[in-house]
Amino acid sequence: MNLNHYNTILNTIPPHVKLVAVSKMRPIEQIQTLYNVGHRVFGENRPQEMKAKYEALTKDIEWHFIGHLQSNKIKYIAPFASLIHSIDSFSLLQEVNRYAEKNNRIIPCLLQFFIAQETSKYGLSWEECAEMLESPAFSTLKNINIVGVMGMATFTDDKALIRKEFKKLYGYFVQLKEKYFSNHPDFKEISMGMSEDYDIAIEEGSTIVRIGSAIFENS
Image (cartoon, rainbow, N blue to C red; front, side):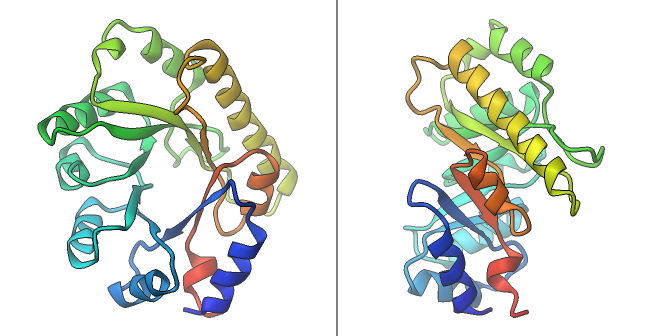
């Protein structure tokens, strides 16, 4: 890895935007290198790998789970995850709540929306999200805290399409804030933007960017 890449990215990100260094499949040594220069927020997409890194490193690191989460893997990250970005179904949210309760925690979560052209990506539709939030069962979940939204744009060179998809996610955020979370000050995060498109995401309102290859790769 090249710390110059990290510093360059850090200098282009406004103070109100959080940088999640996506450390999936990166060795402990590279995470430690970033830690040593003051970085504390890392993102993983495999529960067991995230758990192993949590156990191997100092405990002041803020671990974000950013990948598709299977219900039977929640147990690995529930004791310590700082934020789960990828809530893409009500059943998953219910399971996160169950494991959070077991660990005597309230786990912050983002609602992941499907905004891309690619069917391989996960996420809620607006209709699914509204149905979830309006269901009586949602109000019984006391060990999760919905703090915002997340989305992944289409992997493409078409910047106009990427911008359109980020605008869509921002629009969902605004609608949710107005309709469901107007009295919920914690609902303020928009996680969008990765190595290839984080600059567009920030222009469109992102508060959290998830950057891996642009930091960790030497090229």
